[in-house]
Length: 483
Image (cartoon, rainbow, N blue to C red):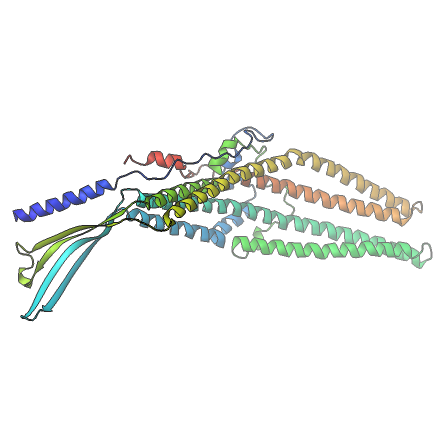
């Protein structure tokens, strides 16, 4: 029994030594520094905390839109796929983490041999360690780091999908609202054009005017009818898009029946600091994690230049008699390393390092572009925001002027002072101005959604929710225990 404990103690010591030897540093090099070359300030915007800090239920004002967004977050297939990808990446990371530990398996068997002097039966049971790699050069650890970065990138990509989905739903909902508003305007215009057509036909029938005004009025009528049909098509297409984004048929009571005049309760849309984008924009975070994952691949590729040492061992009992299997003297153990030494592979392993380094350069370029793209999207939204108020005010004055011109022209035509061509031009100008005003009002609301989305808003539901921000690569390294 004393020998048994002595042998077991040596086995435990050897295993502990093997585990200690695996606690080595990765061979990955220093992380490259991103050079995004972007300005340090945004265009002019309202000061204060970024609206991205708000949950979407606090940012959006219409309760019907909020219900539609909730339906989309539950049923949208793209978001569901992104969530499943997180689960898949999480399991891959778990596998890579498990690879740092020995794989232990139980075994048992009965072997009957006949060597010419009589048959013999041998029984054995035991535990074994199968091909445990001693990670001297950090290859397994680098693969684990790669899996962790890939998991975090996938989680960030899911958040980016949610933000994009919320913005798309809000804008599709607005498209439906303003397509209805344009249809109502086209219907009103068609009615006015029909009145003009009937009036001109009567004047032609009694011989006051020629047939020219009648045909001119008919052209306006058919143009208005075409617009009515076009906006009906736009309404159907907007509803189809909304149903696709939501993942089901949107209930009729959640669709806007009137023109939406307000999308948010915020009087001022603050953008915060440019540095906030690195925290609020999950697509930027995802690009950072992918860059870190490529660095881990370099470490794993470099480690392949060195020998790979694996450890195989087993301990258990063996006996020729089943009744003596667990008695003293039946304990057996084995421990054996194996080594794979790269001698000549025609430069394949070095080429793999070059490939990994190139992949890192590509990931760095993608990371820098993601920062630049995020900054550009915010500035584009702010540029629109900066002048949209003046454009809407000017358009409203244009609507008033064209409507007044139309009324005066119509009165002068009925009094026989001007020709119908003057009325026709005034009608077209008034209709175009009304259409332009609706487009600008829609652009204003879409811009508010776009600014909220481009700043990274929409990850959390309520402002009071605690959003889990994934740590940066540098933070993750600081959290790693010293090896």
